[in-house]
Length: 201
Image (tube, rainbow, N blue to C red; front, side, top):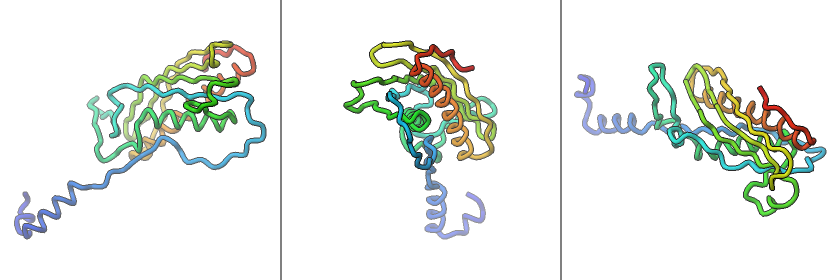
């Protein structure tokens, strides 16, 4: 305890220590704000974005960041608003639904009827370095429900430079997920048109 704190009344010291220990927790989401979009012609198919798998070491409520000396830090004061795998699935689902004008029917009763493209996403790397970059490496596949038509299996690595701060880091991951979703959307369009697309570079 510093000399200055020794001269404070006991209650004041307790209040000061309590304030330091109870800094507010910041919560973040990977789902960006969007504006309403007018759908002119909905797609004649639907999508089903399956639950996303992520590495166990980042499957935490707290944000996990890599430091310059290759240590990792679990940040109690910076947390995701919900399970990270669910956050990623929702972000990808929302982007695909908007880009393709298609409804995500995963978990809904009507998922077993009509043409549905099942999208599987396996995140292999979700790396966060404050002030440097946000990186997502993922394997993904698109196939029509029931095994009809072609199946496309690909992998993508996306790295977004970020400014200082945790909000900028989250925005970088949002941008990476948007770019990944755009690649998946292109594959769905090609398959729906009867083509056999190549994996995007």
